[in-house]
Image (cartoon, rainbow, N blue to C red; front, side, top):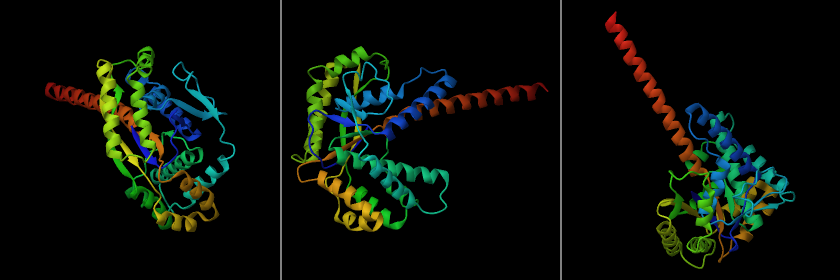
Length: 325
């Protein structure tokens, strides 16, 4: 679980925005894992439920979902989901995505263009967090500058590079459900998140949204609260390290260069982000991408093991046949 933080207004209710981009990505993840699990004869993981479980374990209480989205409301979400309209800002988000894509280098292959689309999604999520002044629960990965430089024109690289250069990584302990605990066992999950020890953990995460304390002391407080959750439910939860990426201000070079790259688009978007960032607040993006990598990587490892076993069996059989002949 990774969080990207930039300055924003503190919301102790811990309700997070989920964009159409992330909802669509979750549908794709769910289909992919369902199909490969059938082939491997594995239990099927509902990636949508896993997404919300991970976000709740990261201290989020409620989720604001696009009002026109068709999202299955499970028992887990019944009391935690509320609609929110994207109508007023959707045109601006579309312009932002188009501008990023139009600044891609020419003659990119399919894999390189995927990095461009991922960057456009990330910047759109950052803008959503600033516009709504709330955290965003996202599937968008944090861009890697080494990869961005190979796919974007130089001017946009300066803007993105300025953002990434301002990122501070903070390591935290988080209480995460043990892998041997069935994900369908939501009665146990519900009892944990409604317990007396979980609420202080949520409140400690809320401190990450304000600049009143340095990140080192906040990380210590979050980790201490996470320990208390695990100590209360040792058979169901364990501590895992999570990486938090923090941005506390927009470097001045971004504001200067953005106008050249984005033109008239720069003023509303970057002024919104600048307004959300102040001396006392941060804005937060919670990324599901590391969890997805873990689940998908586990499936790929099993595929590789099966292929290796089949090759070994075939080689053994061929060797026996050769000896018999």
